[in-house]
Length: 256
Image 1 (cartoon, one colour):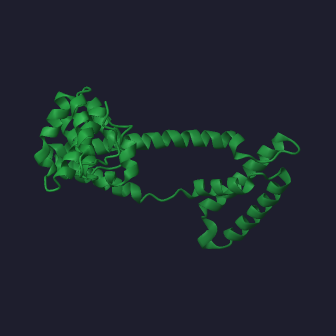
Image 2 (cartoon, one colour; image 1 turned 120 degrees about the vertical axis):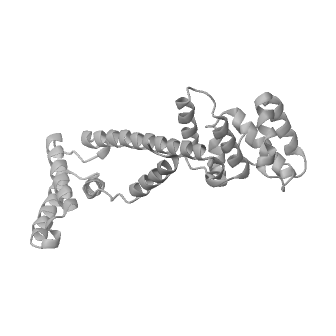
Image 3 (cartoon, one colour; image 1 turned 180 degrees about the horizontal axis):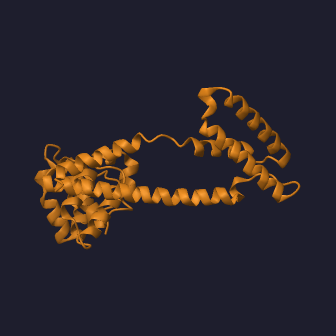
């Protein structure tokens, strides 16, 4: 049976491993050729192909360069582009935006990125769930993308609002913690999080600014006020904003 602590450690290790992934030399080589070939005619591409073949013959004589995967990828790409222009007819120039192979690769890359993002969200959701079970959620730093993770956790719970996750995000917004230290991140959150959560954060921020010595944990009543009457909580946050020393800056509107 996997314990929550092991789940957190495993997810951290997975993120660390992903950062160590090497850049694919084949993709790098192909992209470099396409950048150079843009706007070239068939004749110019043919000359570039001759140069690439010459370089390949020279490299094959040196053992350290004989297994140059990027070089082979570049040579193959020059050959493909040359064939593409020959088939296109006289006067054709290379344009990667009209290259069906490039278009297909871009579509595949978008799909791959979406799958990776979904996998990261699942991993982060598992991590936050493990922290909840350990009673350590309050110590967690919010990350970029946690708004989507909140939605994922809500779907996992059958669309029930995750009050502890919402309270954690509201506190992070109010105190500019972690990811929300950046104003742009707080502003973006205004379009990604539910209005009740934003009102809660704005009310917390106003209360903390009125009494800087108050710990956010001492202001649990703000969540109850927001839940009981979101409109009244929004009005209170707006009123406190006008009080000297009570201005808010969570990057989110308080009107409902």
